[in-house]
Image 1: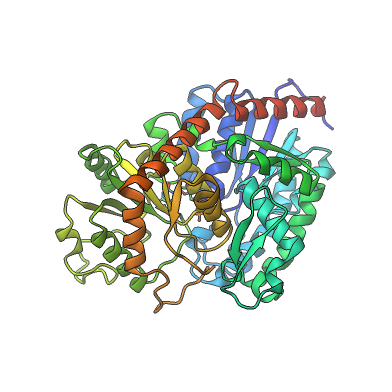
Image 2: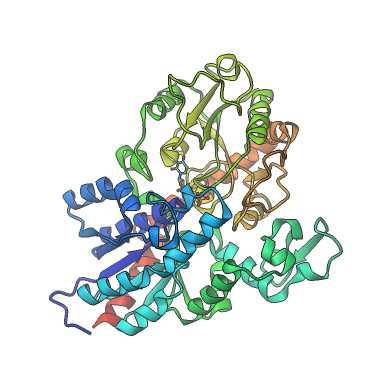
Length: 487
Ligand code: UDP
């Protein structure tokens, strides 16, 4: 290995190109930089554009953090030029091409590592080749999964024991045993490839990922020990690797400017939503947002609108649709006639991107309807807010059970089926179920109990990253270990 000009650790961070991975990995790099590490983020141009202002600001404040750009090979895999992120894909074919392109990132990453000889590579789980690349350079590779130790443990046990194979129907409940808690699931809540046992590009990738996990140096997790103590230990035992809980990483965004800018630039209507929240009573508003990848048909969005209206509760609802333009003569098909006018002052719609952590931190927010993407789940927990779980796909059904059955800080909306690409004409969750879950979460004794448990967890999350807290100490230990390795 090259000799170092100084003994500052230099760590490379390589996120997968999707908001749910770039955002926490950028936070993680900033967190490490705040602890005296020289941090380099390897980003593709569109991801870099989203975070460059934040990184510039950190540098002005004295952190040693930089971005190195690599091109995303969109053209090579047949994607349109501006598509390099899972959040922009609209079909399974496009999604497959993104995965294909990530394989082609290996050589540019190797070139960068050769140029700079960092001490460690923290690479997203979706780059299984990163373990070999790090080994070649003689440095440790840490994996970032973007989910919890809980979800990883449940997934590992499910994959090994396959309890879903010996049941009669997709709707029959089975128990995932050999875990600190008995988790109940149905086959419907599992990904297609587990359900029908078919092989595809994703199952092949998953195999490589599992192999790379076993040969990695360890895993860094955006979570905190107190949230899932038994599962940190279990997951580490299952993979035979060390695990460091260093989150919630979103807490590295200390002021409103950082929080507002996270993941995108905010526009006028988003500012308005915050002023609107200022006029509301504490814990009175439900925040509804389904992350950066979710796809809802018009009929399902209509159903959400009606469920929210019928619940009688105040809400902010983020819809992943283009902003309304003045030229928009036609009414938006996913909105019931006169909806916004009727609910003026009671409901607020953000079209596009919301400053999520800023909104969640507002005292007026009393609940969060979420798809249970891990970042959103953890951000809700960190803000001390109870959740309505509406899982769609990926690890989200596991995260739902964590929230509703183990932490008991939320209720399920009644989503039953794992589905990445929904049917345009099908209603998956009815307005009645939505209304019921909203009222259950926001009003009454059970709501208060959920809220007080959520508040306590939020306090724990904040303590975890403070000096002497569990995540702070995990990070200290990790950095010490990496320093010893690099000498
Ligand atoms: N997010 C946001 N504003 C939005 C939508 C999403 O800030 O309007 C952020 C959210 O705070 C989280 C990330 O995007 O950090 C989404 O990650 P998550 O794991 O929740 O879901 P995914 O998008 O990967 O499904």
